[in-house]
Image (cartoon, rainbow, N blue to C red; front, top):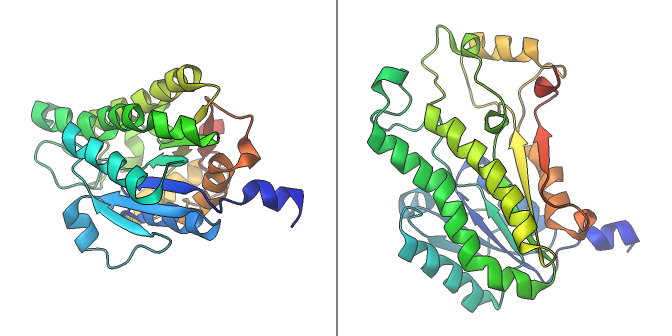
Length: 261
């Protein structure tokens, strides 16, 4: 095996992926499994029961990330059952298409209850998970944390993309993703040199959006298309493995060049 492939190999390492039953989460589990990792996939019990078999996952563990006790149980179970933890990917999030009261609605109708829940799932749980997982990640000697953020963690919204559609990007989504960006930098300096912490920021992912949205988005994007889950595989493999052994506190943007304009 060449030196390059040795550095990409995750054989013997354990990864925990939250939000694993979602489109991106499943792709992440597949990627880490393909590279040899033992993968613990976590999501809500409803999501896991509605997703028969997550490819690449060796364990499926339901957890409510709005509960500190559930988060602690999740991390402890993974460490106990696998013998350690080397990689943590936080993909869990409430997104614009979630059907919650006071969520993907005009600003005047966005509810404080849903705002609080969104920040609890999208941001606070990342803090709590990392706090609980930090000792095991440090013992690994190759600990890597990857937050799945978004270009909306550092860009403002473009309302023109959504005109004439029922799509929306709630304020709490932007704030939660922006918070992940800062949390990753804080953790990168706090957990160094034992654990690396980075974010992946996808742009729009093709998910059957209205043609008007797709046309507008693609016109603004240098590569002239929306992304796919498969476009994230290289970034996940890079940041999880020794290929990025000297990379921490960084943002890897995968948006077809949209944010370069």
